[in-house]
Structures are given as structure tokens and as C-alpha cells.
Image (cartoon, rainbow, N blue to C red; front, side):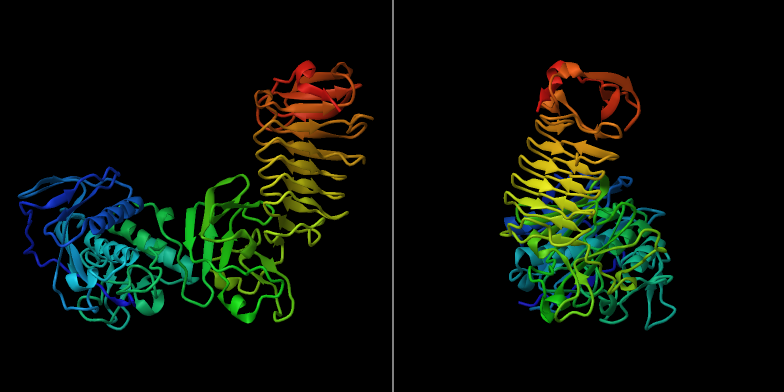
Length: 557
């Protein structure tokens, strides 16, 4: 069944009145800062349909996060923050207009509604699946909140051109320009569709499947950052990061992700797949994440398969993450030129540091770099595929090395892995499982992850300055083997997270009595570090702690 059918905004004519029937059910369980109470004034809805209204109210309260003043509604009492009547009846039969909605009573001075109404066509709602009804109610409730219905009252609707009406709110315009890669002064508003659609929705030809266009579409109808920001223009306090991911229409969907965006959940993301030479159809449908901001690099990228979802985060960065719903990690990749392709293609573009204020994917189209590889879930390879590349393994027990004279980044993910960077300044992450992580020569960074890990960064060359981070679990940090201590003459290892309470140990050569310790702030934060000395030679720094006791924390190799 096609969902592409009209919705409508019902503008208040000043004659609205409260209708609390004797058997009316008011949903007043909403406890978010912005509270939406739904008043079911007839018996048109099933319990499951009513639960959808409650979920919609919750969704809008994720978007609007600031309280507004209570208002006294005659015949009801004080409203905090908005009361919405919900009913169903005949409108025009199958399809066409599925719902009518709008505000009825407004706060003086701000025009923010505190009472409104939604009415749905009984013929249509009986046939809608849960997800489709959710989008329909979400759309109509947006009108009650003021989207499209108080624009003119607030002077935010420019109708000087009848064929090109525009919404002039600054916040929505800013988000519109970012997403579409434009530099316009306003947002295009629908000029067609009759009085119930024109001048109260985003323009369909520009926005396609965005929630607040005049027609709902089969599939996704994302509540975009543009719609969310438009509520800020109306006077609400909003959380723009709570919006759905949304991109302009095209065969490839392109998602611009910046620092501070918070959690972005994307449904229906199309990957590049597992083939080294994807066919034209796959390339034409593959979706793209464009990461822009300090630290959003392939080196820092972390991929984690959480049940059916792929979670993309960045090491040391808490203000942005992406959840690709129902998506397998092996389908996420960038590929180099090959048969059927004349350029690099893939799922990710990392905006170069210092690039001048990117606003859209279109500035970077075709500028893919084959900077990371993803192992298929059944691969067992002794070496990563490419030099100087970021590699994500799989959940198997991998025994995998990098290349000599190469700056490899190897991410172990799940399994009990043995990772070896060989020569070069490498970054190795064990991930989940009990891993053995070996840096080889060069100044390496080794991260054990969860599990009981063994970390040895030494490669028997001079001037090695390795960083060892165990993560959770009982980890062993190697500063020597059975034959000799490491890091003599020049170089040392920095242990960043030693915790004897987790069972962490430091491996040394021979007896702990051969080693001395000193205390000085040389690394990390402001806390004092423990310096580990062999014959007066600094071989290790235990960062930001003095809780290191050689007799109990050192073990002989």
C-alpha cells in the first residue's frame, strides 16, 4: 500500500472549543520537561493505536526540551504544556487527506499553542500499519505544535512570490543550508496542493520524504534537523541533535556528520558490500557518511557490531556517534579503483583537516580515499590487506600482522586475537576478548580493550616510545622478557591505565628487586606518575598513579 497521500494543516478560525466527553481518556503520563497530553474524545482508536499517540508525544518531547508557561484552559484547568484532542471521522474517504490538525488556543505574545486538535479519516487509519500511523500522527502533531500553522502569525512566512514562498527562520535556514550545501536566506515552502497543504509544509520537490512535507511517503519520513530547528524559530527550546538523519534525495543517500551532533540513528543504510569490485547497481545505491570535525578520522574510527546494528564512534570523542540499524560491519567499506570503477568509492568520506567550512556532501563527491579495510566475517588472514591503512578484523580468533615499515592501524574487534604491528609506528586495538598485542619496532600505541590482554610494544630497536593501554580486565604490560629488560639506553613505555584492583601486572626480567621506582609528573594529567628504572635507566612510566608496588605488581617473564 502506498503511503504517499496528503496530510493537512487545519488553521484555527477562533471558534474552537474544548470537548472533554464523559468517557474521554486523557494521556497525562508524560513526564518530560515538555509535556504533551492527548485527549481521546471518542472511541475511534484501539488501545494499540492509542499507544502510538503516546509514543509520538514522547518523540516530540525528545525534540522540544524546554518547559513553557502553564495556561488556564476554560473548562479544563491548567495545561502543562499542551493539550491535544484526538478524534477520527469521515474526511474524504480512501487516501487523499488522511488527517487535519492545528492549534486552537495560543499563549499571549508568543503564539505558542497550549490547546489543539487532530482529526483523522477513519477509512484511512484502519488500513495503516503501525509505522505508517506513527508517521502520520507525528506529522499532524507537528502542526498542532505550530509547524506551518503559526508561521504567518510570527512573521516567518514570506509570500512575496506566490510561486516561491519561503520560511525565514534563521535556525531552520542554517540547517537547510548545511544539509543541502547552499547559501540561501530562507527555506522553500510548498506553494501547491490547495489551502490545506500550501504555505504550511516544506516544499515536496525539495524535501521529498521529509516528515513535514505535504505528503507522507512509503518507507522513511525523517524528522530532520531543519524541522527541529524551525521549532526553535517559533520560540521553543529544542535539541537539534535528537533529529533523524536526513539527506537530499538521490540514488545515494549522503549523511553529513559533524562534531556535536550527538547520536545519529540511520535506518536503511546501504553498504558497499563484500566484493572487491562491486557492480554498478551497488555503487549507485551505496550510502555515504561524511565526517567533518577535529578527530573524525579513519585512524580514530571505531566500529562495533552491537547485535544487528553497527555503531560508529571515534576514540576520545563523546559528542558524536552513528548507529546503522540492521547493518553488518562487513558491508561497510571504502574501496580503491578496480574493474567497473574509475575512482575510489565507498561508504565514508573523512573531510580533510583545515578544509574551508564544508556544507554538504556535494563539495566532496568523488573524493573517496581507500583508507580503511573491513574483513569479511569468515576471513582468517595472516596479514592485513594494505600498508599504511586502517583495518577492522572480525569476531574470529585472528592471528594477523601489519607490514614492515608501515604505519598500520589494526582493530581486533571480537575474538581472542594475536596482533603484530611489525616495524613502523603502529596503532593496534585488541577489542573484546583476551588478546596478545605486539607492537614490533617503532613507537607504537597498543590498546587491549576488554578482556585479559598481554601488551608488548618493544621491537628491540633504539628510541622506541610506546604507549600501552590495557582497558578493562587483568592485563599484563611487558617491560622485559626472560633474557633482558626492554627500553634500555633510549626509549620507554608509558602505561596509561594500570589498575592493580583489576589484576593488572607489569612483566619484568628477573626479580622485582632489580628495579627502582621514582615519582614525578612526566605524562598524562596533573597527577604524579610512577617511574620504573633499571640501573638508573628509565624504561617505563605508569601514568597518573603512585599505586605501584614492585613486590606485588611486578611479575617475572
